[in-house]
Structures are given as C-alpha cells and as structure tokens.
Image (tube, rainbow, N blue to C red):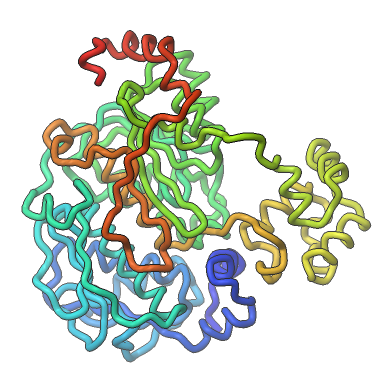
Length: 494
C-alpha cells in the first residue's frame, strides 16, 4: 500500500472531518483512485491548474492516474513522487474521480478553467482558459480538488457548474482583465505555514509583481507538514520554512528577506519602524491581535477553521472590523491546560503542573492518557521523554494513532485543498488591496469565507463585519496614532 509517510496527519484531517476510523480510511484509500488528465492544448492557466491539483491530490491519495500529453505527464509524476515517494500510478483514468485539464475529455469528470480573475468549474468540456492569472487558476484547482473529495468520501453526485471572481466574489468581474505590473511595496509575510505556502505558490507565478517581502516564521518543515504544505517535498523536511519560501520566489521580481523568528520578535528587532502591510496566517490568536496592535496601514488575513476557510482585509480607520475584532475574546475561554486535561484525561491540576514545568510525563501519566484515548500504552512510547504540550499538540495534529472520535473535541486538521484555497484568497487580497487600479473593482466587505467545505461552495462569499465593542479600533487614541503614523486626515482615512 502506497500510503504517504505522513499518513497520521492525513488521518487527523480526514478523520476529524468525517469521523471515520483509521481502519476505515485505510480501506477507502486502498480502493479509490483519482486522476488528472491533461489535453494536448494547455495554456499557462491550465498548466498551473494541473500542477496545483496534482500537488494537492498527492498529499491525500496514494493511487493516482496522470495521463495525457507525455511532457505534462512526466512533469506531474515527478511532482507527485517528490511529495509521496511511495505513490502508485494507475493506468486508466476513472471519469467520475478525475480532473480534466485544457482540452482533455472524460465522461463525468470535473473540468476546472481560469479566465483572468474568475475561477470556473464545469462538468462537461468547457471553453479554454483565458487571460493568465495564477490566483484564478489556483482557486480553480483547489475548488476542483474539494469537489473531488466530496465525490470520493461523501459519494456526492455531480454538482452545479460554478463561477467565482476573486476580485469581487461575484461570477464574472475580471474575466477579461489581464494582469499588469503591480507593486506590493513593503510587506511582512507573517507565517509560512499551509495557508502561507499556498499564497506564496500563487505569488511566485505572478511575474508582474514588484516589492519587498520579509518572510517571518520561526519553524522548520516537519514530515507531518507535508500533508498540506504545497511548497514542501519529502526532501525538504527539517529545512527552514522561510528558506523554502524564498526559494519558491527566486524567479520573481520581488526582493526577499528571510526572518526565522516570530512576528513579535521581528517587530521588536525593528524597534518600532513602520510596517506598511502585514499578510498574516499564523496558527494562534495572540499573534494576530499583536499584528493589529502594531498599527500597519493594511492587514491581510488568511485562515482555516474546522470546516471553514477564508480571508479578510483590514484598515484600522475604516468603519468596519479590524483584525483584532475577528479574534476579540468574549468571556473567559478554556485555557490550553484545560483543553489538554480534558482531551487527555488528566486532572486540571496535574496537566497544569506538567505544562508549566515542562517535566516529562510519568508512567502513571502515560497509563492514564492511554486509557482515556483508548490506545495501548506502547503507542505513547515516543512521547515518554517529552512534555505534555508536545503530546497534546501531536494528538491535535493526528500524530498519535487513535480514533479521533474518541478524544472529545480537538481542533480538526485542515484538508490540503482547504488550506490551499485559503492561501490563494489571501494572496489575491494582498494584490488587490495594494493596487490602486484593482481596488475599486473589489468587494467592500472585510471578510470572505466558505463556511463548510463538505458542502458545495456558496453563492455568497462576502460578509459585512462591524467593529467589536471594546476593540482597539474604536479607541480614539489608537485612531489618532494610526492617522499620524500614515499621514492621514480624518476624511482621507475613511
């Protein structure tokens, strides 16, 4: 069986979304095969769609049929093998679980195309892709993989054809609009995780961009990250995330600086120097709130939830939610130690002691945790010399082989196409909001989201979001500092 070496994270994602056992998921993956078929006529958008679709599929399915034009097939197979060296290639394309690219045709397949800023999904051969645009192409690929997932695991039938403009989230805006030169200027890219990877995938294919990017992330790539990091391959494990991101951007006109640190430390090192734009996709609320407190002129936010994904844009002086509003605490929530105690079956007092002191867990601790999780204590041997925080994080991420339906509610690991689409949306917002000619064509609402990826994509993506009472954006002192910082009058800042 060609299961990927990061299967435990795959199970953490699929098992968390569908509440299936490990055995059931393994059995399903043994029998299913998916396909990518490339036609003889493939434009640049089609090639990008094929690349990202193959990239995403290879992170979940162990058996894949890649067919069509010889040159395209060879390149896509190499890509799939770099992600999962054990992957098996099938000979025959299954129509109802295949994605057809360019002029390729298969009965019952999914046909993604991209026309400028508009991503399209059809269920019969459609008109060829239009103006080159990696954001539209990336969205089309992720949407196609999402529908394929629903066909495989939820047994859904053919869904309606779909259109999505990444400019205003209608159906047609920007379909006849070619990409032109655009200057991002100075951008701090905070977080080079799964969402950040997908955003950079798109930015790396936009040859019209100029600007200066600081890539800020303190972590290295791990094996489990390969479940959804589209820039990562098996050969990249243990490498710095920011270095991998810089390599991905090496053919662009962007100036790149690696900063292997946290956003908070980066800001401290800059000693208060103004940061015009922050593009953020970190995995904790505190850093997102800290990003808004730095008072950048613009913040772009990308995120995933249990079944949701989205992006948002924020200017503090607008009469709309700032980034901190989206993460404003409402009452006292459970602490990390409370959540770990509940998920692992320890008393709050014991969990707090282990968490704070970082001391290794005892045999008694491991026995109690194993019994609560319903696994043999030998399963937890790799964590014997580690902290409770390490074990809890790995339970959440699916590294511990257990039935996720038995541990209570912990955060679901996002699916590869879920993180992928969130990153594409974030990259599109960054380009739109820093381009004076594109900005007037875009949505006014600060938030766009797809709230349940186990259902077909929604007709309405945009969400108005008012300010939260008590947030810093309603504080006149913060507003005055923001205006002075960016040289804005009261009228100009509206």
